[in-house]
Image (cartoon, rainbow, N blue to C red; front, side, top):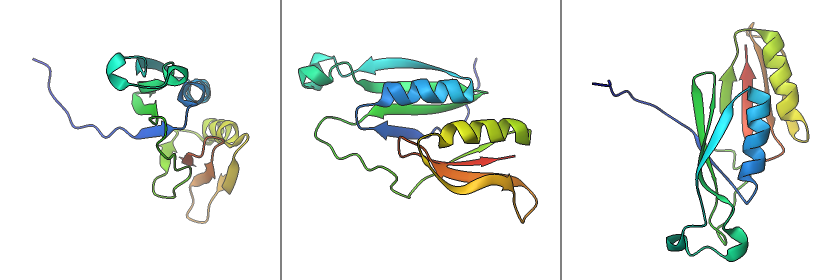
Length: 137
């Protein structure tokens, strides 16, 4: 019998570009993603032009996961709400620097990645999709 465990998996939403964002994150983080459902199910009553959008997907990388979807058409997408940041910790600063630089492309750096006063490597940013990241080593 498989042992059940607790998990905390961030669920992030996008305003119609979820698949593009997941492709970007999979490349940056060395992961893969699977789209489980799209808005094409008749019960969703989604507009024709929105039926190819992501209803539920999972990105996996290094034993971690992020769920994601596009918000339902007509709902408000709150980019960079300030409420949540995704914090990633890497075993070495070179890998962390590489990921930080890739996530920062087209986004806005809050704290450049570098050795911080508390002795650890850290940087934070908001990526081009409005998602806030803290990168650590």
